[in-house]
Length: 543
Image (tube, rainbow, N blue to C red; front, side, top):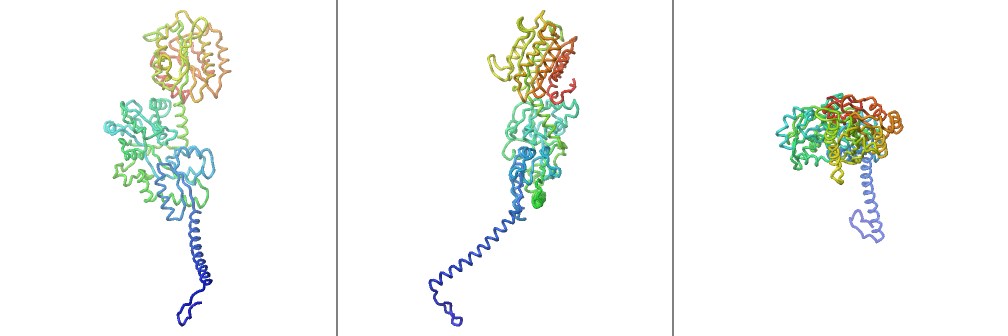
C-alpha cells in the first residue's frame, strides 16, 4: 500500500505486490532498452542500406580504406574495400561475370591499361584518383655514373648496349606493360621501329617479383636498369634496399582509374561521394602516405621525403587497344622456337663463298645463330644427302638446348656436329625427301605454344635424284599443312646461281619463306630479324 499523501509514510509491500512491481520495472526497462536497441539497429540498418563494394589494387587499397572509413563515419555509409589484383579483376570483368561477388560496385585498378578488355560503358568515364610515374630503378652507384645520361636519353637509351634492361612481366604487371609501350614508342614506327624494339628486348628476361628484380640490380656487367613505378622504388627504399630512382624527362604513368560499375542510383551516389573524398585534401594526404601522387602529379609533403616536386612529363602510351595489341606482340616475340635444321652437304656446297666454302658459311651461320637462342629453344639437326640407303642423316634429335645427355648439353652436341659438317664430293640429292620427312616428323610431334619450323640451309642441292618430285612434294605439303597447328618451312640459300623459284614454291605451301644469302652480314641480319618476323611475317629486314 502506498503512503498517505499528507503523512509521507510508506507502508510495506506484500510479496505479491513486490513481484508485480519488479515485473513492471522490468517491463519498463525492457521497453526502454528494446526501444533504444531498436533505434540503434535501425540506424545501423540505415547505414547498411547505403552499401558500396570497392575492389582496389594493392598499391592503393590501404589509402582507399582509410578514406572510406572516414567517409562511412561522416555520411552514414557502409563502403567495404577489398584488395584485388588488377590483372585478376580485369580477367573476371572481361569474362562478363555479373555475380555480386565477382563484380564490385567500384573498381580502382592501378592503370587504365587494364580497361582494354572490359566491355562496360563505365570504363569510358573513369576518373584518375592517383598517379605514379614509371621511372628507372638503378643501384646508387649505377645512378651516380649513368643517371644523368639516362635522364637525357630516356626510353631511347636502350637502343644500344649501354645498359642491361630488366622488365617486370607485362602480363600480370601494368608497370611492365607501360614499359613495353614506352620502349616501343621510343623505337619508332614501321619496319625499322619493330626491329629496333626487338633489339631492345633481345636479352630481357622478365621478372614477376619486383623485390627479386630490385635485388638483382646488383649483378655485374653493364649497368642494369629496371623500370618501376615511383611508388615501388620508394617503398623498396623504405624496406632498406639499395635502389635509386632515375627520372626521365617523359614517362608513362600509372593513373589509378576510378570505375563506377554499379547501375543502382543510390550506390552511384555513394560512389560519387567516395570519389569526391578521395580527391579531397584529406584524400591526397592518404595517397601521400602510400607514396602516391595526386592525379595531376603533385607530390605534396612527399617532397620533404626526397620525391621531386614535379613528376616527369606524361608519356601518352595509354590508349584504347594499346595494351591488347602490345600483349599480342609480346606473346609472339616470347614464343619459343622448335626447329629441325636440314643442312646441305652436297657437292654444290664446295663452291666458294667469301673466304671459305658454302658449307663453312652455313656452319658458321648456324653456330652464330645459336648464340641468340634461349635455353628453352628446341632444336634438332639433319644433313643431306645421307648414306646410299637413306637420303639424309639424323645427327641430333629435336629437344631443348639445355637438356643434358651423353656428350653434354644438346646445344654442345649440336655445335660439335655443326663444326664437323663436311661437303660430300660427287654427291647430290636428298633435298625433297629430307624436307617431307622432316616436315611430317615435326607435324606428328607438334608442340602448341611454340613456333614449329623446318629450317633448310642449302648451298645449291637439287631434288633431281630424289624419290619424290617437286610437284609431288608441294602437293603433299599442302595436304598436310594445318593452319591451326602450323609447321612452316624456311629456306636459307647460300651463294649465287641458286634457283630460288622451287624453294619459294615449297615454302609458300606452308606459309614459310625463302631467302638468298650472299654474305655473312645478311645472315646475321636475318637471325636478328627472326623475332620481328614473328610479329609481322611480311617484314622486310633492313641491313
